[in-house]
Image (cartoon, rainbow, N blue to C red):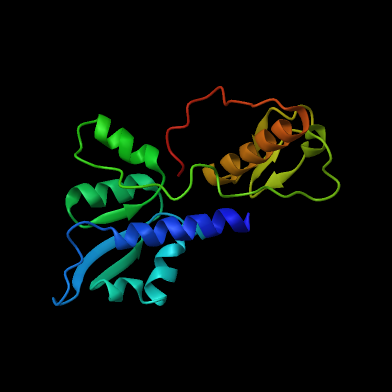
Length: 186
């Protein structure tokens, strides 16, 4: 895990140093708007790079903005409000396929940077029955169903789906795929 974070940091620093057309020695700092889409360790590199003075060293002055989720970031990029965005690649690819003129400059990691941990009581997928996140609950009767207890948010359901998928993959070696198409996360 620490090795993956270090690798992510190194790639990010390389990215910042290689921003085309923004580093001009002897000129005033180049100002630009950059956003990140999630509060995760992989995106914290923007602040580490800023605080370490690497932007300043290359005459860059980014305005780092937090915008939740990829769709609003892509919209702001296409509207010209942002110069760069940091989020998962599929949104940029989808926008490009729809006719937008976007480009993926780089990716921090090629694997999911998150790990799922459980209580010691969860030793196999069946132990997940009845577990809840927010208002979402894994059915007591069948662990392949998630029930809205009355106030579940999409993020609750998606997080619970990931826990179930990861538990089954780890314990049984079976990769579960949703039978539904997830359109949004709000």
